[in-house]
Amino acid sequence: MQAPLIGINGAGIGGLAAAIGLLRAGFRVRVYEQASQFARVGADINLTPNAVRALDGLGVGDELRKSAAQPSHRISRMWDSGETTSCLEMAQTAQTKYGAPQLTMHRADLLQALEQAVPAEAIALGKRLVSFEAPDAGQNGSIRLTFADGTHDDVDVLIGADGIHSVVRRGLFGQESPEFTGVVAYRAVVPAEKLNGVPNLGAFTKWWGPNPSSQIVTFPLNLGRDIFVFATTPQDSWTLESWTAPGDVHELRAMYADYHSEARALLDACDSVLKSALYVRDPLPQWSRDRVSLLGDASHPMMPFMAQGAGMAIEDAVVLSRHLADAGTSADAATLANALARYEAARRERTARVQIGSRGNQWLKEGGNADWVYEYDAWQVPLAA
Image 1: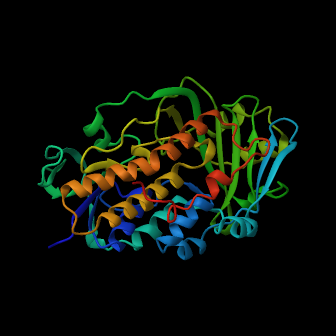
Image 2: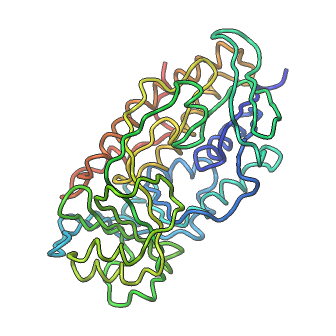
Image 3: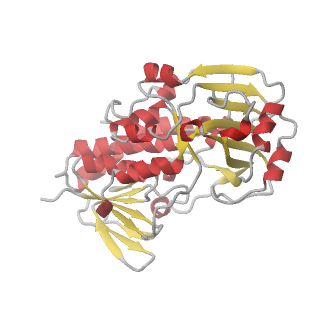
């Protein structure tokens, strides 16, 4: 008897991490990705110790450390005076305390490491899912997938790892209605050599603005050779939710003209910038229906203020693979459905807490406790009953 075939829609961070965990558990896996090829897209990724520990368990942590930076501290500073309001040691201190460091890197380096850990034959490129049809709850039979190129495929379990505009989520629960926050985000990468004289380039530094919607965050990439700049500010005139749309670097600088000179120096060094509108979504009351479920941004898209979007997707992937592994590779339809329900039960409270906490942009402003986020071990948390 063949092991169940797990279909994963989306070859992003969460989808590839889930594929690795499920393959290691003995399942057959097929990842469907709408892009025709993998490309070096995006900019940064900030992996706090909870995410790094999960990736270490998937066997990709050593590869990530070859190109990642390890911020020395997590520093909070005030936008006008430059006053430091909190300073949390990371680097080796985080390794000792949490069992893993914080890693900051180019998003493409993480995706490449994950991709290399998944056999090429398990990834189907150029496959944009348009719909799926599942048997009635409790019934055996395959889930039929239909793609934009007119082809079909059949799987035993379907996981929607297809991001904020998830086709799988829409198929399960209908069209969503996210709320525009009136906040936009800018992203840029600057060579560190252009920032001589700017302090704390080796740290994760957050400049807290005059209101909860305004901030500048910086941290090192590429073993410290580059510095990532992420800034948010109120603006109602831009509503495009895309992480690849170009912005205006002169507008960026003008938005933060009143910030401390050291913060402005970071923006003055930016040659180009990407811009995106930020939308808020409430936690879903349900992720799964029978043998179809969601993970990552498809189930709990969140504001970027706690830097946990990728971390939650990676944790999801590990906990999902553990629950399906517990069901076994000879599991029938009902047992597979039960495993997905248990996975959801194990994850929903934590992800909702982070999702809601990310809205307020107050986490660790004046110190506080990061342990409840960083100490979480997706490999060790009890399986849901």
